[in-house]
Image (cartoon, rainbow over all chains, first blue to last red; front, side, top):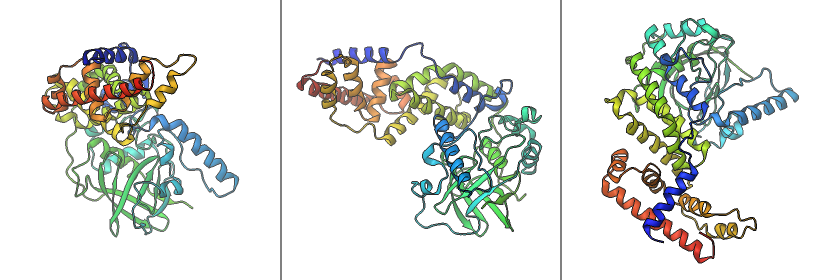
Length: 257
Length: 180
């Protein structure tokens, strides 16, 4: 077989493998609309922004979560249900301690300190989320640029709702700081490290890192972003800063059993 | 609220709308390119999604919107290549036994597409990318070089070694008595 023959076969193989009229899955278009925020505001929210490469595992992760919850309820160890809801991370990254302990993100030296553990907010409202954003210094223009719905119509404060899929009224945020350096925040996965008595850095899977301050009073944990970046990284994009503000700063967290 | 760092100005609504329009126009072609490189539809969907995310974050770096297609393709290709590397799918392996087995299928399900598809799967990520751009997208070498930001000579070299590798894999399959 000559090179020319092989080239012809390659072209034929690609033509047979991929139809010229093959369209991108509808989910991708929905993601696109969520990504562009304001430009898509006239479109109806369909699922939205999320951390990369997780959505195809969402059904599996949800099923696994449901099973775990059922088992925990059955043996009476669960005081309250953990958050479930799209988008969920891959099943392999769910916040079960045994899985997290084997995560490649795990640190060699276990993190200790009062922040380690599971925390959850109460139900928050869209108005509370907007207030948190305003208190953090974001302008209305900045919020609308990334798709925040200032009218709170349909109960969704952040159009795209990717930051834990908890936008809008009645949402609840959870944060699990594991000793191995994994941080699960309302189904999003980060790595974190303590850099001071009341400061930590958290990095998302895309390498976007922000610096947070925290305070613990009794069983209440308050977190706020104190730097829009980390010493080794540049300033995080506006989209992330706003999304993470909604996640971390809307209301205090309460320690969970 | 404690003091926070300086807040950069986000993209304007007009530029965001332009990103939406351009990405929407190019989405199908981008997805098909990801399919050509990764083959699996679910992998292609994930890669395209990741590329959209990255493009939205880097949007302000694109000076000339008319260059959106090659700019976005480069983001997508890099993501596809990374996925191949992380999945270690590219590592060369002897698939001739699989091909022989398939060829012996009494129902005749194995065919030329399977042989070539399996051979392509053994290419390294860099080689799979140039092969897809050359024989799926039908891009000339110079255009591939531009999209990958590498010299044209490197593209030629990768194509040469990729074809050589494919010849070798298929020849091994032939030697074991498979159909081509």
